[in-house]
Amino acid sequence: VRGAFNGALDYSLRHDTKLGSLLVFIWGLKRGSSGCVRLLPIEWLDENTNGFRMSLEAEVPGWSFGPNIQGHQCVERVLLPAVNLYSFENVRISAMSSSVLVGNKLLVEHVKGVDPSRCSFVSGHLSMHSPTRAVVTVESTERLKKGIFMGGNGASNYYHWMIEILPKLQFVRNIDAAYPTFPLLVSEGTYRVRSLREGLEVLAKERPVVVLDRNKTYAVNELVYVSNPNNSPFNLRRGERSKVSDFITRPSSIGYLRNRLTSALGKGIWHGGERVFLARRSERRKYNQDEILKICADYGFKSVFMDEKSLSEQAEFMSNAEIIAGPTGAAWTNLMFCRAGAKGLCWMAEESAGFSAFSNLARAVDADLRYVTYCTGAKSTEDLFMSDYHVDGNKIRAELDTLLG
Image 1 (cartoon, helix red, strand yellow):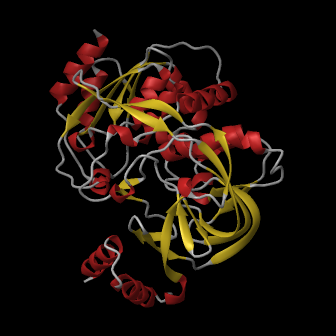
Image 2 (spheres, rainbow, N blue to C red; image 1 turned 135 degrees about the horizontal axis):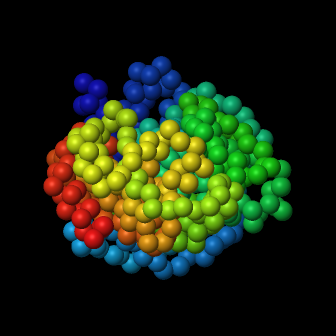
Image 3 (tube, one colour; image 1 turned 90 degrees about the horizontal axis):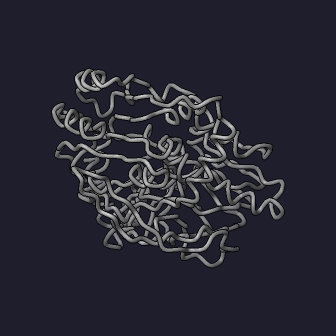
């Protein structure tokens, strides 16, 4: 029954039928919060003119580099959108959503050039949406005087935080004179993770931080919003697959992160030559890790659980790595700390063959990253995030032989 109801609501939103308002009202009654569930029009942030204040970095042409799979790599021409500064008065926000509730409309940040009908931005107060309308929950509201928004979709995910949100601080420095006392508004999901907080502390320095409850919405009198310097779809709708052109990565932004973080986190003399296996303890996406680790151990790899390390420890492991091997996942974000010429072997689902987040990072730091694929049969990005799988050990051996000569 729940699935049928949600399916009817999703259909109504996507096809803009009048039934949507009634279904949203019923949904609110079911949740016991009908007065706090609203059906609102969507406006994409980059198309908004009322809140726009200035461009902090101009729009420029660029490239997206797809995964190198068996010697084949797709490279797509993309547009690196401008990094824009917006400011709003009397708005509502949620720590886990890249959207701002302004009056009777929801402004949503998306990846410019990517068809929003392929994407799902559901997170935080944004419960469901089509390209034109959104179901938004605005209960449990607290009031803040002012702040610079550093939350958004994936704010507690290592990749989304480190590559898409944290680099905003490069541009916040440029607006210090205009907003000198504005605190950073950061999700508790970010702040309670040591490695994420460590990056914030290095780059934010003395600027105050307000930690937002991920389960509440906040009314903010004066909000400053800087668009993502690097961006990718948070999630895709069922039946959609990643495309190489979906991934926007500014080499200059990665250079800023790399230089500022390594100089602050540096730990003495580089010794190099390490062979690092990115091990996982997670119950999600389980695979034949013991078998693959044994194969990699024959080549001198040592397992490291990156999610159990501080940011400085992760930076040290990767900066000293000759070669890295492991399954696709947030740990590959640490490619930004690798030295030029480092090599990598990543295994990833065939269904994600267009996923270019880590291949773009590898290109930005001049690392040689290769991929081995496997099939899962997954029909959505959510399925891929949860599905168990099996990797062919013979493929791993063959690729390692190639990479290591």
